[in-house]
Structures are given as structure tokens and as C-alpha cells.
Image (cartoon, rainbow, N blue to C red; front, side, top):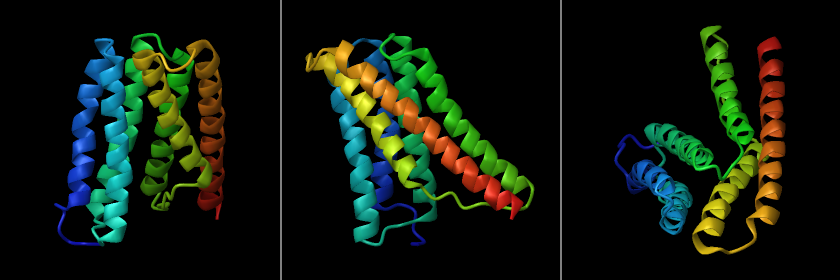
Length: 182
């Protein structure tokens, strides 16, 4: 890991964090086309910061934490804003946020019990994050650009996110219980 914290990769992560309030406001104002563009831009910064960090050896400890914070904040804020304008079901937002809180809580408990656990993304977790991003982007794009009939596409995306969220938290807790008991 690099010692210097200000890298191009970290600057892109900070840009993603700065886009979150804009996305929330655009959703609140029903400017779904602009919200789509801002959300996709934030998503591209996520892909680009990771690529740059790996390709140009710009990995930093603060960057790893900021990237996770930016990802979780983007997803949570977007889902909360979308439930506020009634474009995603409340139960789905509760499930998505509850999963993240459970994982953070489990890590904190392990740390407090002086048995820290390294949280590395599982394949199901990566699929879950991808599904969440697709669900938010599709919801915004469908509303902003009338791309598809939302009554057909969105329930399928919501079910996919819910299923992957449950599978992901189950996989993390299975790993956590094995770690804590071993």
C-alpha cells in the first residue's frame, strides 16, 4: 500500500462521495434523467478508481476505507431517496440497509471480542452490489428516459436484489460464526 493518501484513485472516490447529495436531490426533485447521469457517473468513478489503484499501484489504506464508505453511502442514499419518492418498496430498502448494518455490527463485535475478522468481498456479495447498482440505475433510467415498462422490469430487479441480499448476509454470517467459534 502507498503511504500518500491523495492519489487519482482516492480523488475519484471523493468525487463519488460528493455526487451522492446531488443524486439524492435530483431524485427528490424528480429529475430522474439527470439523476441517472449522475448515478452512472458515480458508478464509473467506482470502476475507474479501482482500476487506477491496481494498475498504477495507488492502493492506500485510506482509499480502501473511503471506497467502501462511498459504495455503501451511494447505495443506501439512493435507495432511501427512491423509497421517499415511492419508486422502490420500503421492505427492500430496510433489507438492503439491515444487511450492511448486520455485517458492520458483526465486524465490530469480533473486534471488541479481540478476535478481528478480515472482511473480504464474497462472490455473492459482489453480485449483490452489482444487482443493487443495476436496480438503482434501471429505476432512474426507466423513470428518466421511459426505457421500459417499469411494472415488468422493476419487480424482477427488486426480487433479485432481495434474494442476493439474503444470500450475501447469510454467507457473511456463516463465515463470521466459523471464525468466532474457531
